[in-house]
Length: 396
Image (cartoon, rainbow, N blue to C red; front, top):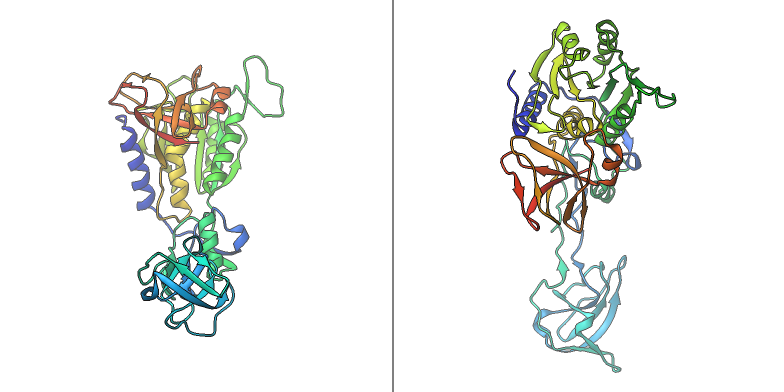
């Protein structure tokens, strides 16, 4: 099977997940528990927003035709109150941010641009257009219009929107259950004291954290030993979940048995190698009607391949309509070079839109990963970058 470029591999994941997509079940939850969940319904505005012409500034509500000039103050209105009268020619009402604009007024002059006099008048040398510093009724949303779409993931801004339209509860899609299976005789539980040739099962716990952050429910399986029989048993169990993530056992070594086992189970392979580093021997396929990823066992390889491939699968299995890869650009603090041919994801530190590569001893160097807050993304066709040049980054 030919190796795919980073873009080709990611496109393959999105295509296959969308083609096979089934609508998840729906549950109703409290608003305070909704962060990170995916909406199972369109959310409509229950009234115009704002429901009245609203002042955007502290100042004075006036008729635009009356200024510049000196006006008589006939009252005040603050947020949560209304002014019962009507602003006539030569009059002004003191107004606070968020308050309803009184009838007759069509502009608000900022308090900083006014002078209040002892005789109960206010003057300004500023002119104003009709509508200045006023949010018109319904300018943000009109009653009955969609303010949040089905399939969108709920973040803190969506929480504010839901609260503003009175959604104390919300219908969301159920979270996908994601099985996590580490493989290898060298892997022991975190509670064990490893022998010299062994390592603790850090990948399973890191993946569980990534799965949970992505909106899935992690299910850590026992470690699969390097035998066909044991690996087969645990893979079958993992395929009862909505998605199976395998860590390790996907390279070309003598004891890398994951691919032979899933092939024996009738798997369809969409790719078994991507032109990326770390994570070249990543596998994506489907068996028993469930998708699976074979993620390389080195920690950085596992983390990167999850973020750029498996996280997208969790998005779509969660009912989301989109699976964004949130890349940004930052300026290099020093020159950077790599060998073209692979898209490389390297640990980096981003501060104030500037990025510095983090020194690392390779994809097993967990302390280096902890010193980074992003992945620097080096283009497969570009080898050299100058100091100050923009380069893509993917935040951790």
